[in-house]
Image (tube, rainbow, N blue to C red; front, top):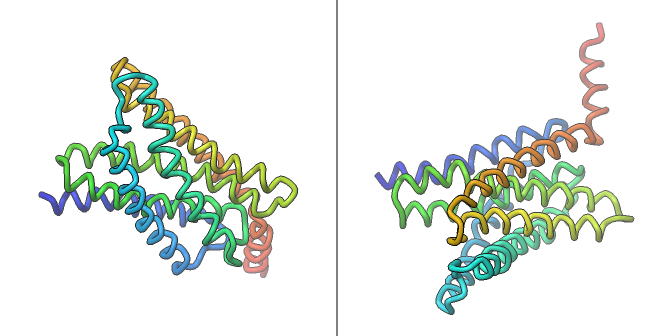
Length: 237
């Protein structure tokens, strides 16, 4: 049974990495930097888990009141997770020559997030029942992907817009923190049971905008024109 849970923990993350790789239409990324980003996403899970375990031992990860749920979701979880993902994105792929078009921000950010989400899923699969793994596969994994796509969109814009670099980088950090925190808050708060529906609404909106941002960057690719020229040349008699 655990083998099935393990597969269900891994496959959604692998599927999203594949889809985001395919979404980079005009200048595919090499496998090696993508693999590095995925592994870095896996590695940052360990200090994040240790940090959140410390918060739990200190009694900070509580959700009995709205204020406690806000602190837990926005600061103790969302802020720590998204900040470390952002730092990983900023320090490795952002500074490299293979980061050569805006959509690469989405590709690398999502790959990092899926490394994190995969190991997180494996831990949950080890501790909880099959139903938890299934639910996470259709909620938590797409949520991490959508937060990452929004982060990557603004980091990608920052990379190629020096005049607005600081503004875009700040948005690339703060927006995922805010959306992630809101999503978690609606799930973990224990005051109003009906608010969990708003977590699904938050996820749906985040996914909708993530897809729009991917399509926008596909259309804005500097390699699109070259690809069209190459296609036309091949079709000419």
